[in-house]
Length: 227
Image (cartoon, rainbow, N blue to C red; front, side, top):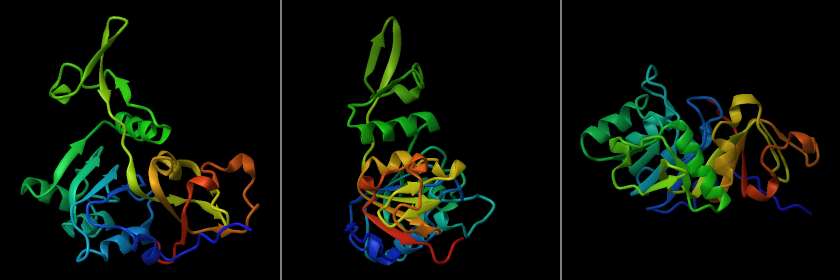
């Protein structure tokens, strides 16, 4: 019999400790685990010195009360590793005050660093940033006469992701762009929680449609509140 992986958002983040590294899926509002973001935000008085790896921290500049802004405003995070923090007003404010360290990558490099972490690779080689300040402090490797930067892999203690449909075993189907960073993050964390609006019985997702197989999923949260 398959292990029961279903739990509440609050239960799913209860094991997080100060100093943890957290991956958060989503591209703005697409494929973002809203209930898990709320549950993590609610732990604002319990956690500190966290590192968040997220494309944009579930934020949108034109909406000041976007969930990612509230999450970053808690001050729980010591560092944000992302591709574009400009839509997160709280993150930008904290960074300007010296209270948040920002580590920014192009989207392709960001994704490949996570993919390398999930695949157990020592890093990835990219020409992006060669000859610029991006290269400062990084190892340069020449391959066939061309210089590349060695970008080290990214892994996390916990990944909070979203799935369009999840079955009782934990098999995940991602619909269209909802997959964004969720798929690679599921392979690059020690404990993976997937939030979904559609929870179905085992076997109801055709094997050909599974984008994240059940062995990578540790917990399932049924979304109750949405945006």
